[in-house]
Length: 258
Ligand SMILES: C[S@@+](CC[C@H](N)C(=O)[O-])C[C@H]1O[C@@H](n2cnc3c(N)ncnc32)[C@H](O)[C@@H]1O
Image 1 (cartoon, rainbow, N blue to C red):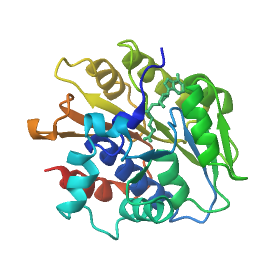
Image 2 (image 1 turned 45 degrees about the vertical axis):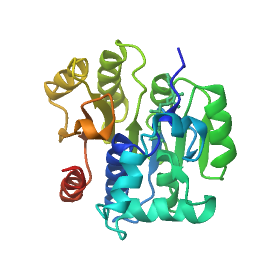
Image 3 (image 1 turned 30 degrees about the vertical axis):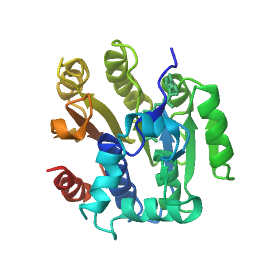
Image 4 (image 1 turned 90 degrees about the horizontal axis):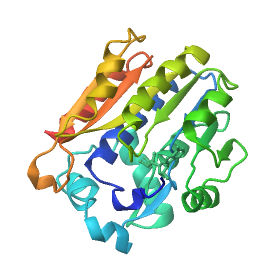
């Protein structure tokens, strides 16, 4: 089932939480000159138009990126803010970068990207927007593709797991996938996003991973008020093998949401 389309949610509060954390982690990884691989299981289309009728329909970006920028919650010098600004310089003030575009703004020419996206339209848009010699785009299942490509060259790397959780069983599937990928690529830095839901469906994922003795397990949840207009209660992130020095930056990001 591929009915989820990220354009309805681009630039909302959970997107900012995830994208800012991604920018913090990538920046810390680049403290070392050594090249690395950046991989995504669920890449989306890479670039979103917030003036589109789909984005307007939910209006989620209004309580997201629009509100946080207006309220000066995001320091302009933050790597996330700089990536958004660079994309907007190129594509206009109503554009918003997806995670692959945030990563591309931050990575160096010797780093590699491996992006998985299964939806034909999203894959086509991603391919059109993200073509470059160091970027490989795959139209395949992100879980299967990431396992098949691991460990990549270079082995040093990061994996973003950002499923759409369209079916209830995907919470258990994502937890199982984290354990499987760590067997093939033990040193990978992982950032996994999940929705914090009133019904608690996400706890299958979070409890399994919290109890799995994973290396350097890290977790952060931010909760939203009703005024956010979002149906989910909050946004959650799990990190594994985070680079040295990332945690203070991730704690700073949490402060944008209180
Ligand atoms: C939450 S969106 C990704 C957003 C993106 N990571 C970002 O932050 O800009 C999830 C994406 O996963 C895609 N998708 C759903 N199931 C998939 C699967 N099994 N393998 C790869 N992509 C999938 C959807 O088409 C959708 O574009």
